Amino acid sequence: MAEIVIENYIGGEFIACDTHLDSFDPSTGTVWARIPDSGKNEVDLAVTAAKNAFPSWSSKTANDRSTILNKIADVIEANLEELAQAESKDQGKPVSLARKVDIPRAVHNFRFFATAFLHTANRSTLLEQAGAVNYTTRSPIGVAGLISPWNLPLYLLTFKVAPCIAAGNTCVCKPSEFTSVTSWMFAKLLNEAGLPPGVVNFVYGTGPKAGDAIVRHPDIPIISFTGGTVTAQKIIEASAPNCKKLSLELGGKNPAIVFSDADLDKCINRAIHSAFANQGEICLCTSRIYVQDAIYNTFITRFVEATKKIIVGNPKDSSTNMGALVSKEHLAKVKGYVRSAKEDGGKILIGDSVDELTLPKENEKGYFMLPTIITGLDDQSRCMQEEIFGPIVCIQSFTTEQEAIDRANGVKYGLCASVWTTDIGKTHRVAHKLQVGTVWSNCWLVRDLRMPFGGVKSSGIGREGAEESLDFYTEQKTICIQHS
Ligand code: NAD
Image (cartoon, rainbow, N blue to C red):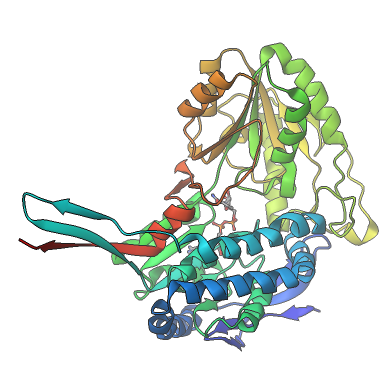
């Protein structure tokens, strides 16, 4: 029996849907919520509501919009604990992580974009020979389609909604069908914050049905999508007939390069966090670690010892470091990579298939997996090439700086990389040559929303951040006037 039945949020109202999908609590394997199985009809209604809200919302002053965005941040913050509990139950992550990272970041997204666009100036040029002046204007685009994944549900959804509406657009959002609950709670908070009806709408359901209807809708000219690379390819195709503006934040196969002069005390802890945080289900998680051969054995010994201390268990327990993976199917997929690694001659140092996982009785049917470390694989093996998106990290040794760079770049993805060294010259040299959107040196996941974020190669198209989100969510026009 589901605890919660979710309704679509359209035009400021909650509207029941005829058919529903089950949503599971990954830590127990039981159904805890039912979400609408929406399709074209529900998307059409939501687009109409968003279109009706656009003229008034887009003509408000930026300051008026800013006031509402700040109120939204306040109400999320006031409900932080409830949202963190729900995010954990829906996604499987430890409550402590949702409390510390997911929900505070949702608050920050609104506080940041409440003011981020208030201080920009238009461009102008003077063409003296032609006796003309040029200047630019910026306008919101209309109804945006915002499609988000299940790994950081409210965190990533609000990273789209906040800049989208701050710039004066309205939107139709589709959260992942695996993790819809916190966005529905968030919808109630939008009413409480006084957001006018129809500015933000939520349509729940699957990607091929509800998501595809958003992507194909002729009255949605702009789509921001975060998710898998294969899904992005479908979105590019489906949106092509309408030439939509797309921002695509996609998968990764992120390397860490650990040089022999690295501060290992700092590196080991952060590298473990980068591999296993959120059960390894962060697009930015480190998946391949290249360690310089002089320190390889020491690194492996210390990395394995520290990983053994990770507690996998009930996400509600404050001592838990790793919760459950998002779904039964995803757990099976991730475990399949361990089998594949063995077939490819890899050695499982600790974790799945070599150690036993004991769980509390209530979690025995949950989708848990031990953090797993694999060595001895060829760079071309599946585990070294494909995005796993779970608690598996592969470690290899390297000899020269150029070799490390070439091997780090030797995948189709290019989201982020981390470089561990105390030599600042080496940091710059290597960072410049890595084919990724973000390089962290001696740290991981230190985010500044003012900076551009996104991937290269199969990890994405476009950037998000203060200037970049403004560019994406507005259209510029050049006006040229001859005055003499
Ligand atoms: P996914 O691509 O399966 O789904 C993402 C969203 O797209 C969901 O809401 C889904 O319902 C929807 N969708 C699926 N098919 C669709 C279609 N045909 N048309 C329209 N919408 C469709 O991804 P996921 O499994 O939810 O998330 C994991 C992936 O997301 C990983 O690859 C991860 O790396 C990536 N990710 C990237 C970033 C980033 O910022 N680069 C951040 C988080 C996650």
